[in-house]
Length: 233
Image (cartoon, rainbow, N blue to C red; front, side, top):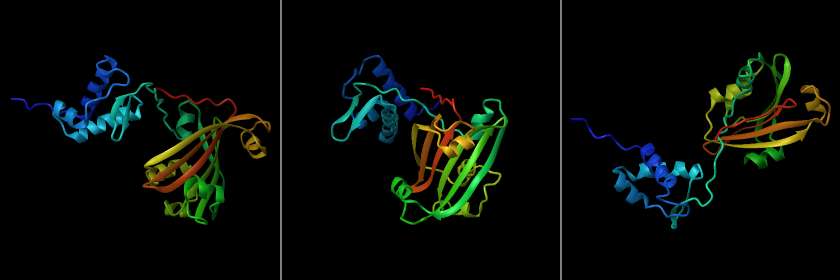
């Protein structure tokens, strides 16, 4: 005799999604409570909570304390953005990757970084500037700041051959991140490193990461003229 299949959060998520798509629960409809759903599906309330949490993160439902869970009136289609290293981006283009460190300095955290990352005033920061190339042509200029208190081993690492982004991925995990995208005009430094004229429009990405509420790193990556980023949803 086969044991009954255990209900997982994916099963609950998929069935809730099916009912929403089939208009069993139309937009704005109030869903049953977690306790009621757990009883219906024969699973733990924590399983239901995880399923609903995932749907809420995707913008399918709205969850509010005391007022319950409702099908979103205007469901949000969220894009999936994969943050890849410069090496991977270059190699995915079937190009040869090369890395070069421009500068490496130990200094006190500047005021703007203290404010942006929630760092202690005057704490030690490792500031690294680096270049990434594709087939010998400028691909990305990286301006990175690492919190030494969060990653003390970085102080003894020279980063001459290993890009800081790759080193950090293996040295310390991150529990949450914040990413921003912007357009900028090339100043004298960016124009020199990215081999373009001053004032050239460039795509820039800023990324901050934390581990258990401790700031880890802030990086500003500026890409060669004409760079295009894609995502899926």
